[in-house]
Amino acid sequence: MPESPQQTRLNQEEFSLTPEAALSFLVDRVRSLVDDSTRRIAVGLAGGPGVGKSTLATQIVETLNASTPDSAVFVPMDGFHMRHSKLEALGTVKDKGAPHTFEGGEFVKFLKLLKSTDKAVSGPGYSRKIEDVVDDAFTVSPDAKVLVTEGNYLLLGDPPWDAVKSLLDLAVFIDVPRETVRNRLMNRHAEEGLFTEERNREHIARVDLPNYDLVVAFKPRAHLVINLLTER
Image (cartoon, rainbow, N blue to C red):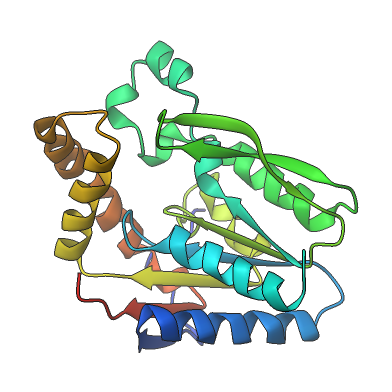
């Protein structure tokens, strides 16, 4: 049976931190996990669209690699968007970004592979410039000790997403107020200039903010919640 959002915050930690303090805190926590383990560690940053997950995830990787080169790698969930051509064939382009427009099962398989393999593995990324998947966007070397992934749906309790949490040694929920997210998403969608402001506003109201609300409902599944203190 799928795990409900109400299944609980047992031992969950919660902090309110600036982005800089959150980075330092999470790097220290990841280093502690590595010190206590002989196997590869997976850390997942979950949260709604526009909360800053990808920025924080890449900063964690950069900080870890600055002290121990090639020890960490960024594994984006966005690389498992359905390809645009597939969404067109399914008639679901308008829903792009919703859970059913991802290859969630393939993402789970990929994480399982990365947790178990001792070989180099390449993975897909996502380009906002073309709004589509990019093959072989990164490579996980055999020496990598830390996988840092991020995505909206890492903590959902419905299949196939429900299998992600068991693969994470640390599941972090990044929380930012809803109105701040709405403003950030308007700016993000406008940056590449691919769509009109009217289209962007409609997409945010119909897809992005409902996804934000869905994801927040599963915040109790996180090991750790960080309320990011930002001015905008």
